[in-house]
Length: 299
Image 1 (cartoon, one colour):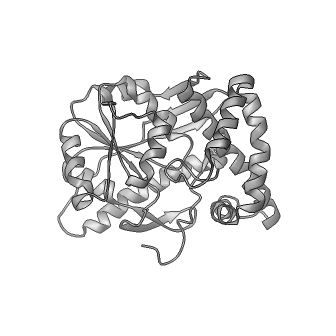
Image 2: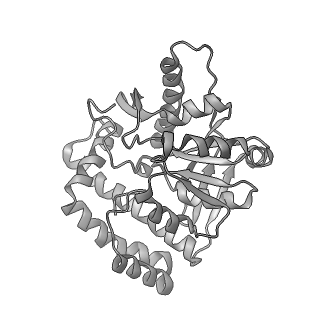
Image 3: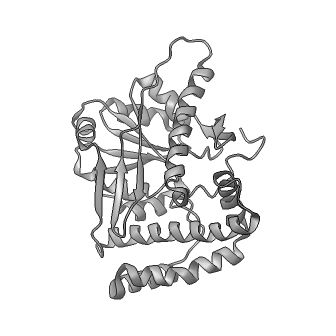
């Protein structure tokens, strides 16, 4: 369970079936109740997930003891589990969620603009639910991710082969998929990148929660080259069936000179890391990295 949708290693069809049945006959309350036992299993036996979650929690709560951090790991796992259930409930049509958009006027401006933009998501809150709400706008959305992650994402966003709203671009294509990315941006569409995990691609060391962390810079390099904005997508669960969706954090990468491009990229990546830090400070149990971005010598 502690993996996010782009890492579908954990979980199985039988487990998902149980949650769907509980949702169908008991609603969210029943599914959330079943989650207590499932969370306990991962909390006790998934040592890798506990370790990576602790890497975040120790920095978020530096004064807490090891025992306290251990119990907060359970709370974090349970929080993510609820949002995974919400995705199942949304896509199955079992539950209608309320989405409160921050500054809807700005979102309408982005939607009506002929210019494309990069949508930078993160393992923060429930970005998949926020993404489904963009279907109402007349822009195609292409998600940049590897082929082995496609099936999980297709299920999460209800993407099918005849869908013209969502598409997937593999970074394993020629030149890292840059050519189709630029085409989509030039056509005025949206290209979505995951901004807080490098997945083996080039990254920069920036300050994050009082320590140096590795964040990829590819999305900012493409944005600067194509002169499109980078829109940060954040979706936080603020109520039983309510989410706050925020697309108001916008970065406009533009090289001031051809020299020291890495330094300029570092400024934009740092700005993004600061936005995430503020989000996790407000919603400490909606950080679902489950990956040690602070791990040394991993650039």
